[in-house]
Amino acid sequence: MDLRAISPHTPPHHPPAPPPYIPPRRCVNQQFKFDHRKKRMVTVIRLESGGYRVLVKGAAEIILNLCSTVETADGVAPLTADDRKNIDNDVIMQFAGLALRVLCLAYRDFDTEQSWTDDTPLAKDLTMSCLVGIQVS
Image 1: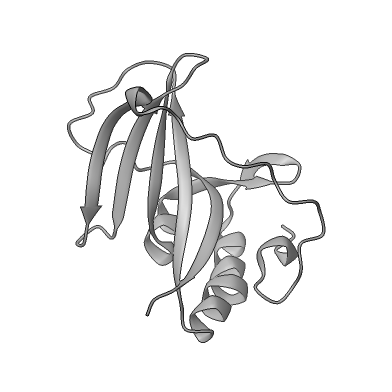
Image 2: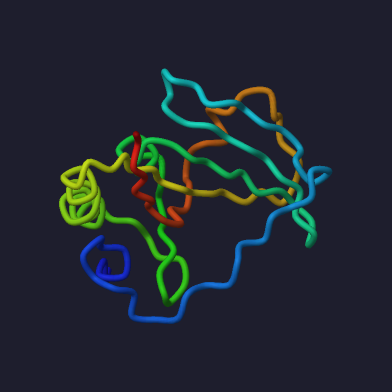
């Protein structure tokens, strides 16, 4: 896995992505507010194409362990133990060394409606989308 694209010290090697699609409020099916014990928040949206997407944001070291795949420039790929170790050492620790709080954004798609009453079964087998370092003042 080429981690240069997400390293804080390496400029991106491809043009910036278009602005993200922000679903209308009516597309939000369920929202689980930030839980400090789980160190994450979860939002479920209905997709225009049908089905549902579970969006998860939280502490990188926690969310990374809930991911089984990762988005790459070539599509979605399995997330191996070596990948996790490299992401932790090469990205998360570098961001943390710059005094940045590191968040992981991940998702999971479902073809059909699920029981949206508990976020625990929804927040597993996720696809890691990106890591974000934020400065906390």
